[in-house]
Length: 158
Length: 116
Length: 334
Image (cartoon, rainbow over all chains, first blue to last red):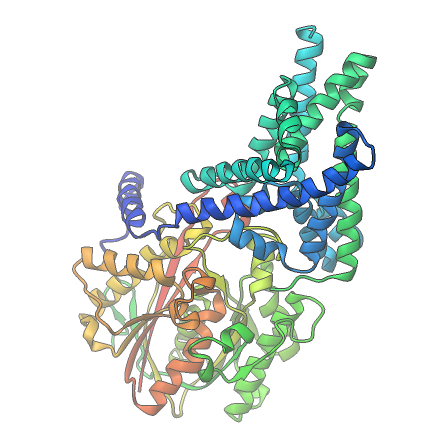
């Protein structure tokens, strides 16, 4: 039996640990500083664009609370558009979290899934799988909001 | 001025998110869910709204803004109409987000196909 | 003659000849550093089809048809068609077999399928069960992404160690008699799992299996690495290649400059493709395109081909399992 085949469960665990160290040695180091800077610039720019629309809606005599909704809607539209044009994934390759965190990233996940799963049909493909990536954000956003409000309004009476 | 602040605050939130991705084994999905939950908690405690007042889109656009809006929506409605408000309150922002994403996503998917 | 040598190596009494092979690739592979070696270069990654899955089948059908034509053999002379791919239920292989109407044995070895197929062709022919065996494998960037990872247009920043699935197909015709490099022997792989869990670390997941098969091969045959002009791993990529070398060194085997990897060769270390190419087609097109031409020209005389595969599924990964690897070795000599 070759030296590299583990003899038993314990031996495998030992080898795996040692191998993990070897892998960490050879793992390519990402340019963290550069990635942070790119995330900052890409994310900031998307928010900048959002601010343009936010100000626009405020100018149209909407209150800050009322201006939020159309701003988000526009950013969702832009995210979908950029995804359809095939440029949002390239933006993400550059900006990482800077593209994922804004609401346009949420919209990208829905559009990307819709585009991809269209091949399996409109109902079972696109319809069923449109939220396959964005689902968790919705689920846990709703759970959190509900829970916090429950605690604050009904348990703490605030 | 508001443009500058939005850029900086939005940029910082995204940079912090990128830092988490670099230093931990978190997947982007885990990061986004955590950020949403964080926004929800801060929003529920009333801490997120001042950030929105200050930074505008810089706080609204990141997904933490979404989380905060869900929480504040639930709180406002719960105070207004009671327990049912917990269920209808999130609807305003969730409804907006989901409806917009579905409509625009669907339309784009009709006309566009994935490219490598 | 005793065919079995050592633990897991078999030397054929009547080595089959690899009488023909064809490689079909997509645009990115054609544009890579070994692009000139591929037989058919298709501009459109969807090959004119509506879905990527249909496209992948066309790649495989083209490769198999071209191979049969090139070797001047009719379908009714083929005893077995061995094929596999990365997709669930190996549909590219099965649907191609449907078109070809040949006796079909479907294989799943992930990216090691080309070597696995060659090995089985060797057993069938040397064992006297077949005269001609056709082996085919395919992979496609879009079908692999959809199944194993994410929708194509999704915003995701790929890690540096991640690999890029090769779009293409390779087909190989092994025969009882004839000209061509000879399949002299094979070393059968075992599944080796050193608990790598991240699919972005595929090279690291497969390297232990590759090192194990290579080590076992040298132990079984008593040969040294310099017996071969080329030792070739299918798709360990930049990172996996280094890990393979390191593991072998720890076991006292040093690979020299005669060691190359398909994943690194196909995109030439271009960072846009991460650590390099992967997929069943990676090892297949480089073998059919580059290695066979070099063997024919006499620039290579003895090659140890090690196909490497990662045997996880999207579900096992989601359930927190690690990624087991396997590697099969086949020896081609002029």
